[in-house]
Structures are given as C-alpha cells and as structure tokens.
Length: 341
Image 1 (tube, rainbow, N blue to C red):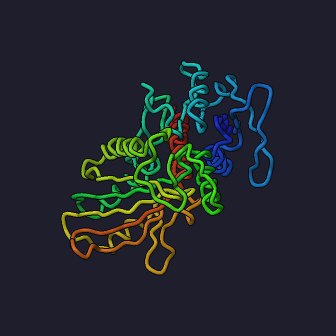
Image 2 (image 1 turned 60 degrees about the vertical axis):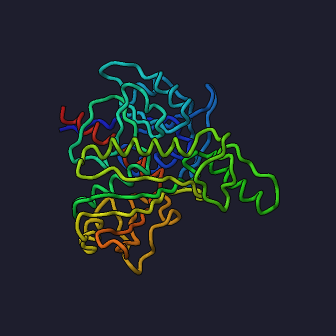
Image 3 (image 1 turned 90 degrees about the vertical axis):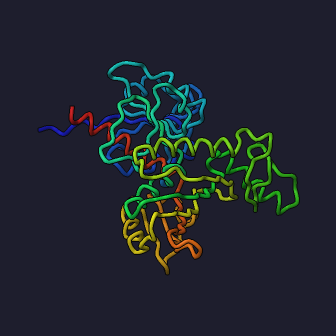
C-alpha cells in the first residue's frame, strides 16, 4: 500500500516570535517536510531569517499557497492574520486554519482549543480553531489533573504575564527600559505606559494599547470554556500581574480540597505528561529554565500551614512553546480525522 501523501502546511507570520517557535517544533516533525513560511513582506520581496544557524526565506502571503495547504497556522499580527484568513477560499477543500495569537477569536466560526486541557478524543467540527491563552492552558490542565487526586473546593491563582506576550514590541520595550534606567535616560513606554523594568505591574498606564484587566478577562473567559468539560473543577479566583520577565508564563496556586490531600498522590499525578514535577532538591520551575522546553513544570509543593486541606504549587511554562504544542495537537487531530475518512 502506498504511503499517504504528506500534506502541505503553511505558517502565516513565520517571522514573529510565536511563528519562529512553531516552525522549530514543526521542523522536528513529519509536518515540516512540506512547510511553507509566509510573512509580512510586500509582494516581490522576502524576509531572510535564521533557523538553527541556517538562512531561511519567508515569502509574502500568497493566496494560492494558502489554499494549497491542508493546515494554515496564523502566528503573525492581528492585521496579517486577518489578511491571510480573508484569502482562504470557502468550500469542502478549504484548509483548516489554526490561530495561535487569538486574532480571530471573535469570528463566528472560531472555536477555542487547547488539547492539553481537553478530554481524550475531544473533536471539534470547525474550519477555524483558536488556541487558548497559554496561562489558561497551563492553569486549566493543572487543575484538571489535581481533580484526579481529590475533590477540589476552591483555587486562588496569581498568574504572571511575560513581556513577550505583547510580541517583539513588548520585549524590546522592556529591554530599552532596562538600559535606559541604568543609564538615567528617559524610558520608552509605548506598550506598557509604565516602568516595567525591575518592576511588577498590577495595571498598565492609561495610554497602553491594551489593558492588563482585558488580558485577565481573556484568560478568565478561556478558563470558563476549557473547564466546562470538567464540571468537578470549580472556576479559580484569578489575578494577573505583569512582570519584568522577557519570556515564560508562571503562576502561583493555592488549592483547597474537600479533605486533607495526600502530597505523595499529588506528586504522582503530576509526574506524567504534559507535567514535569520538580521535587525537593531539583531546580524549581522558573521562566528562564523553561525557555524552548515543552510541557509544564510544577514544583514548590507545600501543605498550607493554616489550612490542612490546602496546598501551594508553583508552575512555569514557555508561553510560545505551550501554544505551539497545542496548535500542533489540533493539526494532528485534523490529519488523523482525514486518514479515517
């Protein structure tokens, strides 16, 4: 029997931080063998990028390339993603579109996805999949796994947003602020409208393009959707803070069970994919240590000294890698469905 043909896959926004991470993961899989890199270059030009010290060419968005693809990943700016999606021709042979940056979340056809926090065998019949915010994936997956140890009564989560969630502009502003602060120069505040360097923010300035409150609302909305499949997991109380961290999303969790939990049972439950449990003596989860790493690191497990039924946990993940992993899982599910037809 002949081998099934490998489908063409395209990434729109390949030059972005999220796009670069996605293409790294795809290159290591069979999907990377027919990968088309599309970006924001104008027609007739191209962007020269690097991949494992080798030059790669990212060409402009092309309608024919998009529609020749079985899977189209959207990883660019909101404007670029909307432009790419507008060029996808409707019909039974239309490519499946997977939005990694939530640009098309409000589109009527969009369905929120996070296979890492979905029940086994979960299938969604849609042409437009939107991957959830990485903090929502991280928190939902962790609470769902903990619910296998005992009945959850309540959880309080403090999540920490990295600068890279605002794209390259956020990373560059944090870098420029750090340099300016050390050299006593005026700081750039276009993205955060506050001093983020050497700081933690509970709110952005009034002139910031987006508010921290709106990001928290997005995460909460995604958690409602992801946790709806597991009614035994109550919606957490969430607070989002912006930290002076370039990359990686972290969270501190206080979990209240209905009865005193067995710490060994919690550790055992968190010793399986996608989790990497870090016990005493191991390096505890931190954003720098999770750069370009798959999965979710969990550690600093402690019983609450004032509430016998509660525990504390700390978790960290690479925000881009977490989204890329879930996007590829969505694509894999689509292709497996094709193979069964």
